Amino acid sequence: MPIKQINSIRTDEFEYILKIDKGDDTEYKTLYQSNKKIKKWEIRYLKGKKDVEIVYENNKSYVTFYDSVGKIIEERLFIVTKKTERLVEKRIYNYLDGLLDSITFLDSSNRFLYKNQYYRTPEGRLRRIKRIYSDGSLRVSSYTYSRRNMVEEWHGKNESGDLIRYNKNAVITSRENWVKNRLCLREENYLKEDSPVLSITKNYKNNTTTRSQYNESGNIIAKKIFRAGKMIRDIEYIYEEDLIISKIRRSKGLWEKWNYEYFPDGRLLKKEYYKNGELKKITNYETEKNYNEELYMKGKFLMRIYYENDKKVNVEIPGEN
Image 1 (cartoon, rainbow, N blue to C red):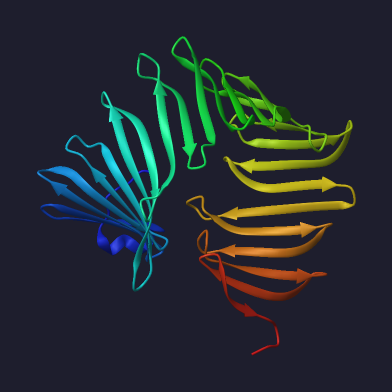
Image 2: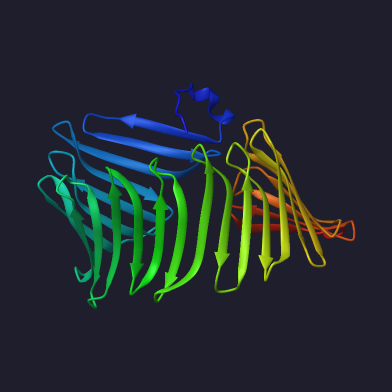
């Protein structure tokens, strides 16, 4: 999201505001959403270079220490309450020839949790990440290249994991999920000028095949799910200027529809939900996490439920004071 400078009297015009205060050796940044503080940065400098950065968010604080050339040397995670700040985890960074070699994760008592070891090609390109746990078990991420382009990556543990393949332009062409050397899911993407037009996903665990179609903007416009060659679910998506305005889902004995309306800036304003032709719920948004839900039964309004920060704060029922 682009950032632009505004006059302080215009703060009510925007959902998100970033306030920046700079001193000689310290810089403070505070992010507000609808005039409510949601994140804060404190950056300390030593001889003009970043020395320590502290980030406060969601009752947690993240402290990052830097060396004289700007590389991270240590991170600490704290749980913050009104009275205490409790250390949860430490991460120690090590470098080899200027490149990240390993990260060691420790608990609040400096006990070993796990370690990420990084392996590189002679040119310095990342080839493998090996995570070593305290019990000796491993999780590996590996990367395969062809003519300087990554064509495949694997992330897994104990013969289970995910395999991702790319074309020469770094666009994903397929994904596979394996469990104990058994293929459980495979998704294959069919591209036109590196944009998806169709994807076919086979789920071998529940014996389903999903066909998803996309428009020129890459938005999904249709999804059909089959089992044993018979369609069991059909989903249709309708857009205006790349914003979804309607979704219809059909399955045996069930017809569902969602309608969407938006603020002028593209944020979601209203969502309606219908089941078998009957209005069930209307959600009215102030922000993404502040909204109210109107519930209906047989066309009659039942109640309105208010949420702040995704938590229920009030309920209104007709006829009740």
